Image (cartoon, rainbow, N blue to C red; front, side):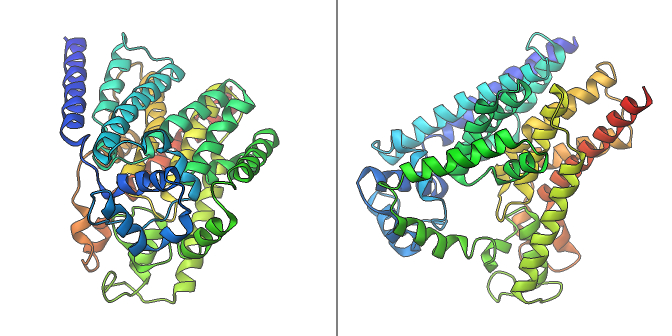
Length: 412
């Protein structure tokens, strides 16, 4: 009976994903058009430096039949490689192709995560986690918005798998790809350096330098200079970056301590921007050191959970991360769920720790209208960051399990 219920949920989840993809998979959005627009510009032989200006980029996207952009162009020049193979298609057909590719990459990622946790679809736990992955809300956010984070999940999953197999090259290449395509991967790179895994650290840095040099004929130094001047110098520091849509430590601190008449009219305390920026750097650095200290890089299961925690950490310590970025928590959640269930012999023991973990998953998995609290005052404004709190709680749960495992190993 239990197995029948799980299979039913799995089938329902699969139908929901397919139905949602059919409904939204052909509709271009601002997020999708930002990626598509970059690739289209390169395909047309245009230099990107002019298009880091919002109005110029918006006008260009308008010529493609999309009249108004809601996001500013802020991605790396090399982000244009991401959709280059489909940039020759119309925006609608390109969105369809991207949706199909994203679903394939997602299913492959989930299957590989199950394999790393020694789970199979013929097992009850494997079926249950597979159904959960299909019902995972960030998946639907990525489908609607045509975002890049499913591709990042795929690359990070490959890197985790390679690390557990102690394959340096295969673990390095996906991180280089995430850095080039989206700028993600800095936290894992720092983690490898922190753990003195110099082979992977040096491989990533050298490959990154080589690929950037190779790309110079497409992206001139003036393009990189425009990106640095227009984007890097301001990323995570403008009042708009303190919008509650950005569920990060940086966004939280900006919202609480920055005043802006339009976006942030009700801070707790108004502090100078330089102080808030310094606070963000210090808090994020402390979080990294804390998580890095609890991680291990040797041993297959330890490597999997540790690397997954570091990838998740990269979401909440990023300058800006919206809800769809929390799809990168999936490897850590699956790993922790598997470990908890295995420790309890397949049963759910509802203690304080398990309750906290399941509550955190629920906060990430269900739709919450926290954006309506953008202009709320204290104490209501503290309810505007449920995804950030959930991410932090999951990392705390990870550290609790890590300490427990280490205690048992020392005891034995």
